[in-house]
Structures are given as C-alpha cells and as structure tokens.
Image: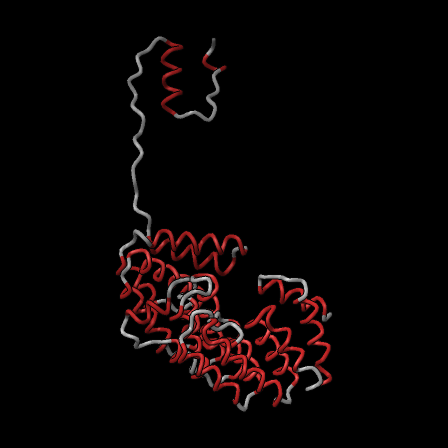
Length: 331
C-alpha cells in the first residue's frame, strides 16, 4: 500500500503515528502531546456573558447565565464579590448577583451576598437596584437577609421610589413562596405581608397579598390581614379577602365571619367577588350554606354565587381545580 493512499480520519495524531509505524516497520518513537489543564478566565467568562446577554438568543442567554452560576461555585468568592460591586450593566449585574447568591446558598455562607444587598438598597441607579434585587430571585432570600442582620429587607426595598425596584420585590417574594418553598414557609409569607403593609404602591401591595401563600402564617399576621379589609383602597380590601381565604384552618371560623361581614357591607363588586372566593376557599364543600345565606344581598352578584354552587357540587377536593371550574362556568 502506498503512503499516498492513507487518509487519517478523526482519530488522534498518536493513532496515525502507530499506523504509519506498522506500515513502514518503524518503531513508534513519537509521544502524544499531553493534555494540559488551563484555568478558565473569570473575566473572560463575564465578557462572554455580557455579549450573550446583549446579542444572544433567549436560549443562549439562559445558557450563559446558568454556566456562570455553575462556575461560580468553584471560583474565588472575592473575585465574584468584586465583580458584583463593580458591574455597571444591569443585565450583567443581575446574572452576577444570581451567581453570587447561588454560591452563597451552596457554601452556606450568607455573608457572601452583602455586596448584592448593598447595591439593592443603596445604588444610585434604579435599574442597578432592581437588577440587584432580581439577582436574589430563586434563592431563600428572606433567610439570607435575616442572616445578614436584617439591615436590608423587602419591607425596606418595597418603599423604593423606582417602580422597577418595587416590581422586582414583588416578583421575588411571589416566586420564593411558590417555587422555592411551595407555599409552606411562614417567614416568606409573613415577609410578604410586612412588605405589602409598608408599600405605598397599592397595586404592588395587592399583588403580594393575593399571590403569596398564606397557609402557614401566624395569628398575628391573620389579624393584620383582617385589618386590611377596612382599607380605603378597594384593591387592598379585595387582596386581603383573597389572602384570608388561604389562612390556616385554626383561623377559619373568625375569618369567615369577617368575610361575610365584608360581603354584606361592601359596595365594590370586585371586592365582593373576592370575599365570596375567600369564603369558599375556607370552607370548600362546607361553604354552600353560607353562600346561600348571601343570595340577594347583592343581586347583581347572585350569578357568581350560582357558579360557586355549581362548581362545589362537583365535589372537587383541590382548590386550583375548583377555582378553574368556577371560572369556566362564569365565562
């Protein structure tokens, strides 16, 4: 066989040398070039992240963020903290913050997030403050704040003058309650109520009360929610009614009385609908008699009562299924 007929494929250079030695009867003296481990440049990774966030597809942006979070676990903490302190691009800051918060959770060192908390509370750029808050999303951020002395809290951050910061606070607490603790963490729920009561933005407060799980809150927090039934803001009265429908069973009797009184005395139709929903959620199948007692109080809402009664007759045991069926009936 002529050497001109040999075309190495995708094998290694060492394999080709062995084959050539066999063909020509020569000893294989060449050694393969050993693989050398090289350190990944943290600065280079941040530069790649910045480019990906500016020009990459959604999938590539997600990949770049997740790659940084994974790499951050083994990177020197000081480098990552310095990067968070110095970054000026909000999107990159959010990604760096998420990586730092992830490292903090992985190493169980809550102090690592101090630069992120400082920027969330003190940065002069509202977009940077919002990015720093978003960087905490998906972690046990309420616990991290407490372990850092409680100098920065969501109750404080919800008072920010910038709407994007307030939005980030609400998104964080809703996500943490639903996706990190699946509604079972009392401290998160009570932090959400505290933030809602401190908020000057009624819509932000209403979303916190209506979307964060209240299944584990204490009696003091239940009383705070009941006080909101007398708020001057209809959105807050309705959100409080929705929240009270999800409180622990031990509170249900007194809460039901408060919601019935709200329905009878309220004039805003949306608030009355929220009161009905709260009553049904508290009692499920046992709420049918209470609903019937309210028929005629607000004749325009009797169809709402009819829809709840029809849904309850199906015997559904899961709240989300019952609510979905009721909404289907009201379309």
